[in-house]
Length: 102
Image 1 (cartoon, rainbow, N blue to C red):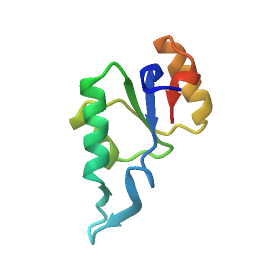
Image 2: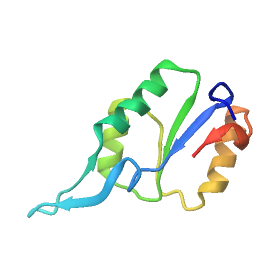
Image 3: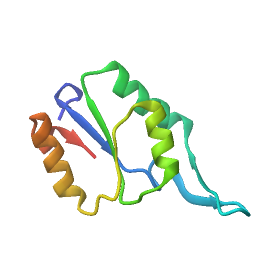
Image 4: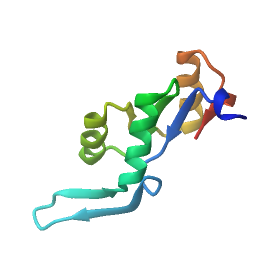
C-alpha cells in the first residue's frame, strides 16, 4: 500500500503513544505520559490531510478524554474487539479495512 492509498489511521493509546504507565498521586488522581512527538504527529495528520484519524482503546479514563478532546481527534474507548471496530468504522466512512493502518 502506498501513502496515497491510506484513508484512515487507527492508533491505540496505552503502550503505543504513552509509555504504558499510570501515575497515581496521594489523592488517587491518575495521570499518564503522552509523548509529544506522537501527539503532534496525530494532530498534524488529522489537521493537514485527507486521512481520517481515530484513537481506539480498550480502556476508559479521563486522561485520554482530556487529551484527545483538546486535539479534536476522535477517541473511542472501551473497545473490546478492535478488528470488528475497524471494520465498522471503515464501513461508516466508505472504505475497506485494506486502506487503513492500525
